[in-house]
Length: 232
Image (tube, rainbow, N blue to C red):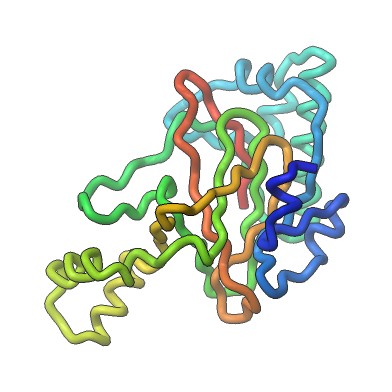
């Protein structure tokens, strides 16, 4: 087991998909990891897929159509099985081949793209599942090691300059523009990388959630390397 996982009070590791989906978040635990050392050649799959734009969704039939080596076929079966497990559970998984996400550079004092530490929000009880099979992997950070950007005085002041209305309307403005979902990590904070091959379940901000939502971010991609990511 990766030492950084076992040392974290935020993360609980499990050994089966059933444990992953049926273990409750509680206390500080808002990230569950089905820890796996996967066999198979995921690079071969990436090399044989076609990137149509910066993010291309890959469907099961696209995977099935690939001519692969034995190692490539092992990787394909792992991905197909993960997609089926999540679909049978009632989730809607997507497999993405991606070069990069769209950047938010509208303001120089706050970013709301996925490269910024953020939490996911949903009006219904749900969780975020993700697994990076190839390429750079996402990071998470303990809630105690980050601060909501809208609470940082200089950022809040600049946001207020963009808005002309009451304090109550200002709070709605922050939510409507997703500013409240983004976090600034503390100077001495230590993000944890989610690694390759592990299937993660992260807590989402929703009305029935019993724990703090998991703060996470997309990684800066490695030069010349695509990511292969399952997410839902």
